[in-house]
Image 1 (cartoon, rainbow, N blue to C red):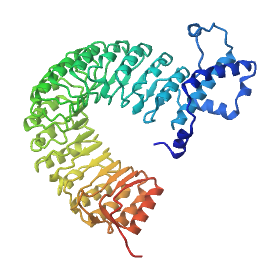
Image 2: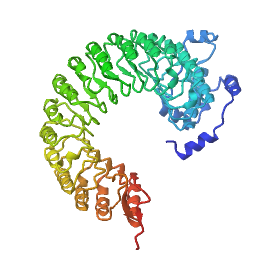
Image 3: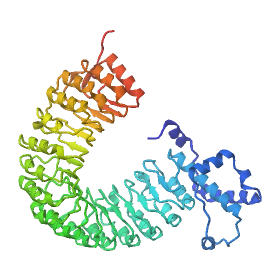
Image 4: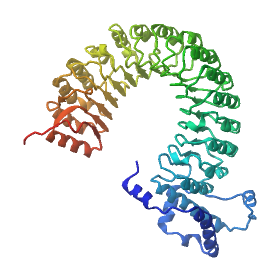
Length: 574
């Protein structure tokens, strides 16, 4: 977020008119030519020279061919003039970037969320000749960039080293796609192109860009999330994929892909043998879609990340993918959350998982029908590789909890465990935490809405005391209203052992309201020991006005954000 001074600077900055942009370079050229015999050292104050050194100003030395192309004969401009031009150009870059509240960098220019106008884009285009070392350009989430991209693309030949281009959320239109496509041959080293959240890319317009993608033979990542791709666009994408042999990441999430569209795209996946990440979350996939996708998996033996989450109609169809999934021996991340998985789907996973020996991340959250089968899944997981295990809202059965607890000692690499929204965890937390090894690598523990009681928090306190949670960065025990005051007091008395904790959430569920007066002092006593804490959420807990004042003052000194309900304040007489 821009600081107040930066915002003020933006508001008071002088806007150049298009006429100024044309005339000013000639004015500068004339003024400096008159003084070209003067030494460069006398033209700049020491502070400016220091700024130049610290900012890493790129030395812009035009080649003879470049000068001839611009109509300037080699040797027509002295070395001093070239250096002056370079320094003045970088000065313009610095002023432009700082005006937007950003830090200038000759290799990475991040101007996302800057409210760029069409005039800004024109000015930015004139600055590209002074950014010849640029490798990363991020203009995401600038709504007014749409319909103005040509003012930038006509100068793209000056940033031929560009590797990353991000234009997500810019309201691009068909004209922008055409202009961008026609300039891709000027950035042959491009490795990542992100055009996500641009609805104008879909509707049959993608071909305007796709037919030029072959110029980016080194392209490794293509992000088209939520672009409203149509079946016609899928044809254009399929044709482009045939010419992208180096592609490693393809994100098509949030595009409603009909079966026919998936067939088009799937037919070209054999031409992307290096694909490592395939994301199709919220694509409207169904059982037939999974069958088609499964047939193409044999061409993606190097796949490491597969995300087909939030496709509620594909439940019951994973059996058709069983044999294909077993070929993905390099798969590290499998995301199937919110897919309405059935018990039969879960049994399919029990058969397939043993072949996925490299699996380190598994997300099965929000699949309410698999709770009883999970007890058979836990023992076959690659326990010594697993880093992330998310089982929120899976209706874990009473038999599944002991099965999960039994594998805890073997989860030596586990960093994130989420069992939120599983009522069976309440009263059974001891089974999980007592098996955690001292100094285990667990960084995230989510126990929201698990029906925890006071006894559960006493066991959590015990785990803190013996150092089993010393690496924890996030602890979510919100929506557990059955925990008594003694449980919270005991937890905070040992909270000092959570030396790396950054986020803590103990909020109550909506509609609840309880007093925090008994344990709030224990919490404030623990704060000095929680040096890494950055966010505390205590929504719907009631505090006395003096208690709230002390808590807010203590957290403000530590630059820690407090999330609470201001209305839940009791006026306590002094």
